[in-house]
Image (tube, rainbow, N blue to C red; front, side, top):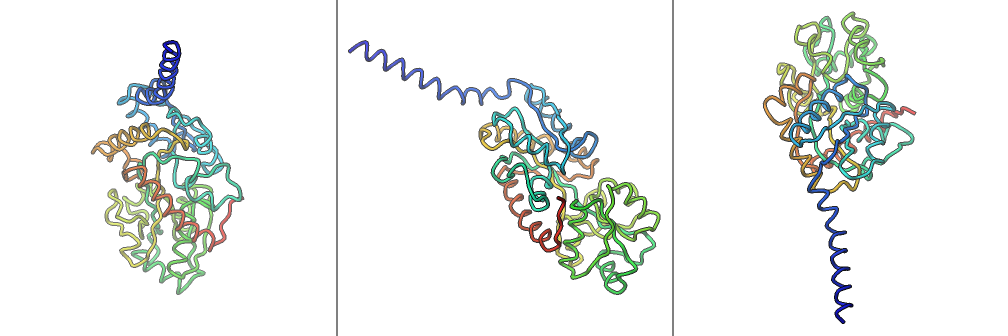
Length: 325
């Protein structure tokens, strides 16, 4: 009887250790370096924001957070690598609204399901889009520009930084909500589009605000509207589209995600630390250098944003018939 009791006690102890091991591992997290996968090349705004967060997390948590760039396929390759990683907190990603929301409506096939295979961790920031014109265009704001296009559609062409980009989708959204057909000109990125806008080859342009801040500030370009819900703090004189009676919102937002199944305790810890890093006065000023506005919150807020953006962009993309492959 005593022998049987001893065996039962040993079995209970082993079971208790097995159950307690994951909790112990989570409480000690991180006890080795953590990779932050960025699904875009080095040097861009996503990469710069990721490196700022990585440094802050390294300083706060005592382990190195290493940025690993995995660009390609509109952000799908790097974000897929996050989805396929072990859910142990040692591989996370800083991705954007493109691969997290828009791409599933643009690409015929996706290597991952963002809604099922990724765990929301933290919303970080968003970059508003700006619709701008050459100063020679006789419109002070977006409402007036839409009226010009309606009156003489053949006289105005609007550039965008590439098929399927948020700049392109914003124009399709504007067309949908204003009932106006725009002659759009796709470019391979912001810089060649900006060159043609400054030179007058195109009359207007829709793109994320980051690359255009110096020329907008100097008056070389006219900001017709920002398409965020509030004015951009760095250029407060540019009104939002909604202020002008045009019901549209289009931004690029950045978020930290992990593989589905990442332990809740690790998600909570990362969320708290990331919010603290970017939410300071210094953090807000640092991100504004990249044209970003800090927008933090809980993992549930990020999931809600993903759901709401999915509804918005699915409608725009299907109505316009936009595809990438």
